Length: 246
Ligand SMILES: NC(=O)c1ccc[n+]([C@@H]2O[C@H](COP(=O)([O-])OP(=O)(O)OC[C@H]3O[C@@H](n4cnc5c(N)ncnc54)[C@H](O)[C@@H]3O)[C@@H](O)[C@H]2O)c1
Image (cartoon, rainbow, N blue to C red):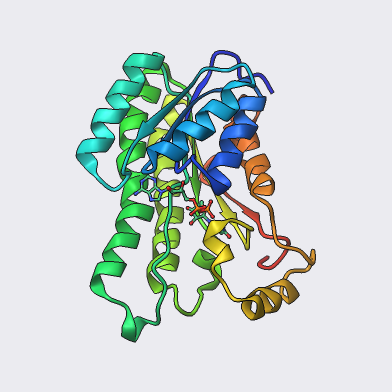
């Protein structure tokens, strides 16, 4: 895979799956912008991966705020000259059963997980269309396909990402831009650490490969979709879930 001279933006790249994606791309020689609401953590991650010999930049960004997204992407395209890869990874959960779910928790999850993908893709596409090259990879979830009690907002946001990915793929294929989604299953990160041991054991039993995934398992799929070699793949979802959903 030849990524020479390429720049990627990874949202929520400061920790967890986003950090693993940033590291995996950096190992392939991709220059990186880590865009995260936590500037401190983004700076730490950026400093760590700089040692791999690529250019990195940490920026503070709330992906759900359209004015911030426009400004940051303008700055990035000025600073880097191009954006080849956008990984829409930032995401949150605010779990509860529908009858108890607050409207505010619905809105927060939809804005950070789904609206953000629209906002960031829109800005990146402006740059990618001019280059006639781009790779957009959106991080969905297995629950978009299976549903999950307590995650009405989250599963709806991730199912929305799948539809948005397919539309992006159809609208911008003619400009050399591909858009695909990766749907992780149960991946060990801060997001899943919060679950009880009982829930974790129950989930493990439902995974044919018998283990939880690692952030690196997800990153490997993202790197492939981000590569020039994946140029004939668009509008697809790659499931990285150990077989828990087929
Ligand atoms: N961990 C899993 O099992 C799992 C499974 C399926 C999908 N996912 C998805 O993978 C992605 C990463 O999840 P993770 O487990 O690494 O979570 P995480 O909580 O460890 O990391 C999320 C990152 O996003 C950042 N972030 C949060 N809100 C933001 C905002 N408004 N603007 C910018 N950045 C923001 C956080 O600061 C953090 O760095 C999410 O989209 C999540 O929904 C995770």
